[in-house]
Each structure stands twice: as structure tokens, then as C-alpha cells.
Image 1 (tube, rainbow, N blue to C red):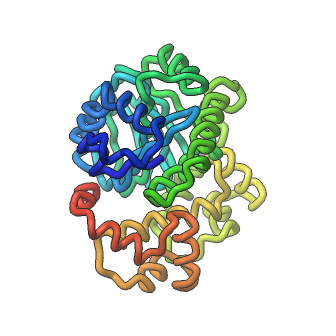
Image 2 (image 1 turned 135 degrees about the vertical axis):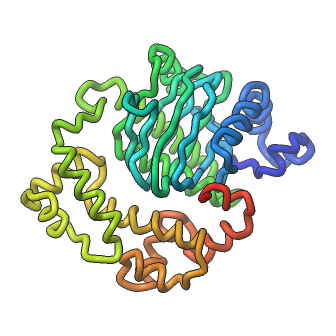
Length: 328
């Protein structure tokens, strides 16, 4: 269920008469604890989200999608746990210089406990979503909150399936009233269930750079970012890492939770989103600069990921003045 921003901020019950009672009751619930906190987070971040929406059902959530560039921010502690997922962009570090508590890369997530103040550092563009829980939870949401209550710092969720489910949920949010409510409810349950499994299953919890030759991988990731318009085939990247193609595929998948070619496409789309938002460069040229073989290939990849064409995305960004703040 999506509640448009104007309706949500006006808190006008008459504007919600076309929605199910469940959604309105959930809105009242989050208004009691969360709206002030969300506003505080937005103030701390210095921006409004690209999109926001509410999911109702067995695992209700309020979703916000952000795009930032070159930022260092301190975010106030929340009254309840908050779940974050990074879809693309540069490495993000949480904590203080010299004593990082968490490092997040694309396809990774964090469960931030209640009453946990966070400090974020990153350069480059970062594409991520924030998921808020209501004040009264049950099922998997309650289990995650109980898990977070035992932690004093953010818990890393290194699971590509979680990231994929979160991304699909955000795509539905961008559709507004055209979203599939039942599908969103299922996505929310699956995302949180898989997150809980990842956090409580020893063989899947924790990301250990020593086991995946992290320094070599960092070299490859930097190369990808600096050569998006060039040949970034798996053999080329394996050569940069100094390992065989087969070993590189295993190494990359273990570390990033996604195959190399999918990561490259995500990186190219991330750069394309930035250029669409902050330049007037023709769409065909953006596709070429970002390494897509043709404008039709660029459009197909963009639509598959963002449920809109590059032109529609640019129009959406330009029509929302607050969105420019996210790229300052």
C-alpha cells in the first residue's frame, strides 16, 4: 500500500477513505512514534527521499529510497531498529575514523539497533533504501527487533537475495498507486525472513575479507568505477585480479553476493542515474559513456532495474526540487 507524500504529511483521514482500514490503522501507528523520527533522520541526512511508501501486511514497513553523493553524516539514534540496504555505489563506512564499526558495499545491508547513533562516511554516489518498523510488530519483524535488541552496533547482512528483494520492493514503491500491494507484502516478508536467516546462520553471517582476497577485489572494484565505458568482461576483470576466470567468478560472488557481470551493469546504471540527475547530457550519450552497447540496451537495462525509462527517470528527478539536495 502506497500513501503519497502529500496525503501522509497532511495526516488527513478523509484523504485516506479509498484505502483499506489496515493501511490507515498502520499510518496512525507510525504517526505515534515514527514520523518525528523520520523527519529527524531526513534533517540529519539533509535531504528528502527519491521515493517513499508504506507496505502493509504480515511484515509492515515504511520505505524510503535515497541517492547521495560525497557525504559524511551523523544520524540520530532511533526509537526502534532500522534496516538499510545499499543497491549501488561506493564503499560506505559507519563509525569513527580509525574505529569503523561496519563497512557496506552494494548488495549488503545493515540492521541498526534502536538507540544506536550512526556516523556515515563515503565518497562517490551511493544508492540505498531505509526500511522503518512500526511500533507494534509481530512475526519476523518482532524476531528481528529482538535480535537487534541484543546488539550495541549495526549488524551486517551479507546476502544478495535480501538486496534483490529490497530492490524489487523499492521498484514497487516508485510505481506509486500502480504498485502491486500483495506482491509488496510478500516481498517484505521474504526480505525480513531471509535477513533473519542470514543473521542467525553461522555459515552465512559475517563478511570476512581475509577469506576472499579483499585487497585484490578492491583493486577490481576501483578499476570498474574508473573504466565504466570500456571493456569490463569477466576475463578482463579476472586479469586485473591476477586469478583465473573461474576463480575470479567464485571470489567475486562470495565477496559481493552477485556475479561480476551483474555488478558491472549495476555500476553503469548507478553512473547513468547520476548523469541523468545532474547533467543535460543526451540520453544516448549517457548510455555510451556508461558502457552500454546501444541506447536500446541502456533503456532495456534501466527499465528492468528502475521500472521506468531513462527519460522518465530524468523527468521525475527534475520535477522534485528537493531531490537536488541529495546530490550536493
